[in-house]
Amino acid sequence: QVQLVESGGGLVQAGGSLRLSCFASGRTSIMSAMAWFRQAPGKEREFVAAIPSSGGTTYYADSVTGRFTISSDNAKNTVYLQMNSLKPEDTAVYYCAVPFFGHTMSSRSDAYGYWGQGTQVTVSS
Image (cartoon, rainbow, N blue to C red; front, side, top):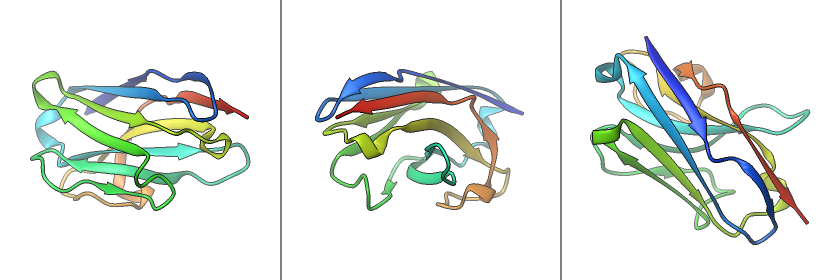
C-alpha cells in the first residue's frame, strides 16, 4: 500500500501562486508515477499534471499548461505542484494520486489506485 498526504492548499487572490506538496509513504517502490487531479463542486475529477518516478517528460492538462509545474524530490518521496497565475476556475480540491501497480502514467483517474485526502485551493476574483 501507498499512503499519500497533500498539503499547501489555501485561499489566494486571482493572479497569485500556491505550491502544493504530496508526501508518499509505504510501498513507494511500486510507484511508476505521481499525478495531481482536482475536483470542483458539482464537477467530475479532472487530470491536472503527472510526472514519472524515473524523471523525464511531464504531462499537463491544457487548462494549466504554462501556469502549473509538477516536480518531484525522490529522496523525500514528495511531489510538488507549483501553481502560478491562478484563476477562479482553478478553485477545487486537489488530490495527489499514484497508479495501480503495473500501470503507467495516465490522465485517466481510473488508472490510479492510491489517493490522498485532498487539499482545498480557493482562488478569489
